[in-house]
Length: 178
Image 1 (cartoon, rainbow, N blue to C red):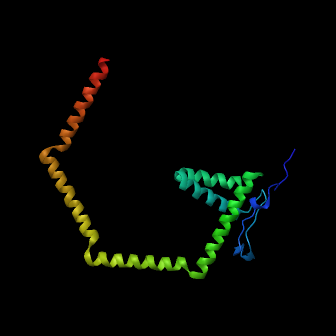
Image 2 (cartoon, rainbow, N blue to C red):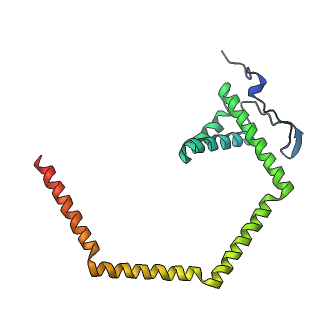
């Protein structure tokens, strides 16, 4: 006995929207709606992105990875789970397309790159003028030498090793008595 596909109301398989989105280079009015159990790579990627972000927010990167893989795989299943995953994938794909359209219109990545380049150039000029990296390296070398001299004068590492050895010996003696 097979279950008929898409037996749920349309609210499970479409995303209401009135924005114009780009689908494979063609503009269409309304949402991307891939409801088949053989979804496009855009829908799978969209579901994986949504699942990954959700998992990352809930429990961190490992669960994020599991969520991404699980949501991507779920898009290829029949039933409610597949419908929900494909809806999330459609939403993720639509969001990606909208972000690309906004970026194309406002050149966000170009402006960000320009600002980042300016910040890097300013930092390099500041470093060149004030020798920040040279002074930091010199300070680190000086601190290391002074720490080594202090250790040689006061035998900190030797005393610490001796104390640890004594503690371990005491623990070992107590454990062997029982």
